[in-house]
Amino acid sequence: MKIESWLFGTGIFFFVPVAVVYGFLTNWSEWVGILGMLLVGGLAGMIGSYLGVTAKRVGLRPEDREDAEVHEGAGEQGHFSPWSWWPLVLGLSCAGGFLGLAVGWWILFVAAGLALVALVGWVFEYSRGDHAH
Image (cartoon, rainbow, N blue to C red; front, side, top):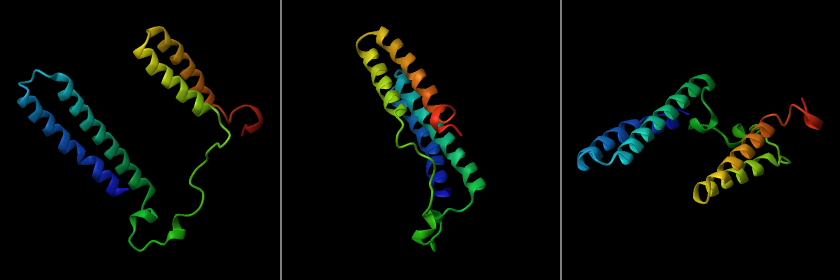
């Protein structure tokens, strides 16, 4: 993960100076672009630092080594629910939220409530019912 950490970490050294140059070119009158680029630089720095800390904790992965074999990356990669409907409900509520921004604010509030229900349902999916641990 050191390559990913370096890639995202250098984003802060790119976006912050570009935001300053953009500020000078616009005479500091266009704040949305300046603030957006500064926020992207901060986000790149946060992701880079997270990946750096995770790389120290996890160690070298097969993808990080030159002499790694294909079979070293085989095996279980995580736990995924192939029968879960909650991601679909959450995606539809997000689409409803964007529709609410375009059409009417009342739709946004309904979609936010549905998104909250879907998020809680997805997080606690394995805490209740047939698949409880």
